[in-house]
Image 1 (cartoon, rainbow, N blue to C red):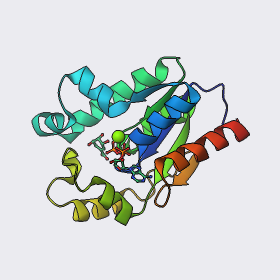
Image 2 (cartoon, rainbow, N blue to C red):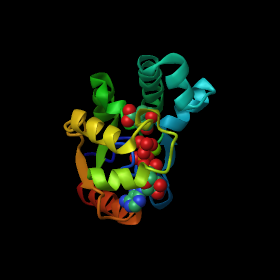
Image 3 (cartoon, rainbow, N blue to C red):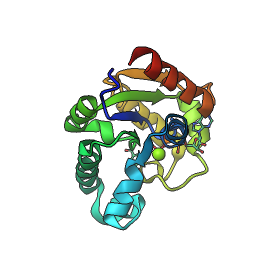
Length: 173
Ligand SMILES: Nc1ncnc2c1ncn2[C@@H]1O[C@H](COP(=O)(O)OP(=O)(O)OP(=O)(O)O)[C@@H](O)[C@H]1O
Ligand SMILES: O=C(O)C1=C[C@@H](O)[C@@H](O)[C@H](O)C1
Ligand SMILES: [Mg+2]
């Protein structure tokens, strides 16, 4: 890892805390914060759930790839919270590793389900959160392994996760 890199990139399954932890990191490190899902919504002028319904997942993935590249190529120092599926595209993984220090947040199924069960905005979890989470976690079990550093957030508060990332950033940069 090198502090010469312009971005700390958080990757991980839905509900692992990327958006929440990115806010804490941004406050503590003074870097700007960018949430890939929010940027996609701004770029498209519609909600992620509407993009999935109206245009389909493959179209969403193309937009996600374009928006991620534009965020990573812009040289300002930043914390990027990515969407849970942004790592599925090998091109995205290469870009993240080239331009950023990539941190994977993980959590076990039980904690993920607890955290996402009352939020109905995630299109891939519609129609049965437990079943969908378990199935997607199985499909994606190695999808986040490419990261430079990994934190299991299951039994940590978001503050503890941010502390752990900052310690690693400061000690090993
Ligand atoms: N370590 C944690 N402990 C307890 N609750 C948490 C933790 N991390 C996140 N949460 C809670 O889980 C929910 C989802 O968190 P968040 O939106 O940050 O996840 P995400 O990784 O950005 O998800 P997505 O990929 O869907 O955008 C929020 O209500 C958040 O407060
Ligand atoms: O895990 C996923 O594939 C997704 C996660 C969300 O962050 C959004 O990017 C979208 O709902 C897809
Ligand atoms: Mg998020």
